[in-house]
Amino acid sequence: MWNERYSEPGYAFGETPNDFLVSVADRIPSGKILSIGEGEGRNAVFLASRGYQVSAVDASAVGLQKAHELAEKNKVEISTEVMDLADFDPGKNQWQGVVSIFCHIPIDIRHSLYRRLIDSLVPGGVFVLESYTPDQLKFATGGPPTADLMMTVDALREELSGLQLEIAHEIERDVIEGRYHHGRAAVVQTLGFKK
Image (cartoon, rainbow, N blue to C red; front, side, top):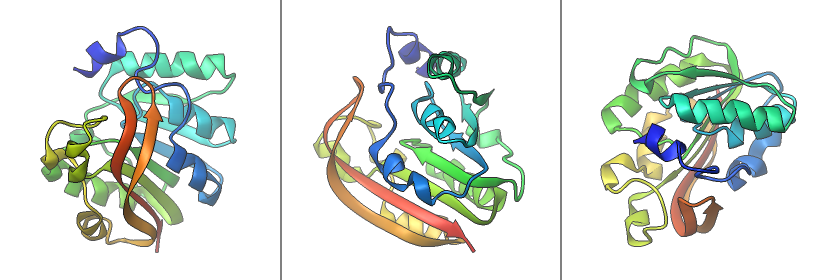
């Protein structure tokens, strides 16, 4: 599905970074950032333009190829890895930041993945996430077609229990990101520091 979507002309979710990520980027310590479910690279390129060393992971080779093209266009460098997140090993104590923007994955994979991602952060490292909540189904302006791939703040408080959460809320906001995220939306936003 994702290779097919990313094969369409242009950038499915636009070339500009996610608004929530932009609003909290200065809270991520300088150094290495891992961006999961990065797709076509808009968030990785933004972070690289701010001086971070960015590694982007996605299951779509087509999306990551476009990420490299976007990086070249913006005169920055990123590294990429094509990987199923169910099998991904992010290492331990090596990232200053982990970013997950609209990366919706099955809950059974998410529990173990988030544990590994928290372990991969250095002490004081930052985890940034924005995802759709089940309330997004009433808006139908983007996101997965089923609630089981969406997230709630209560579930994330449990799944991210190794972090000190400084932002953890569900809100409605306008999400204008390319062709596939366009309009009023129900989202959960979190920012947490590794203790």
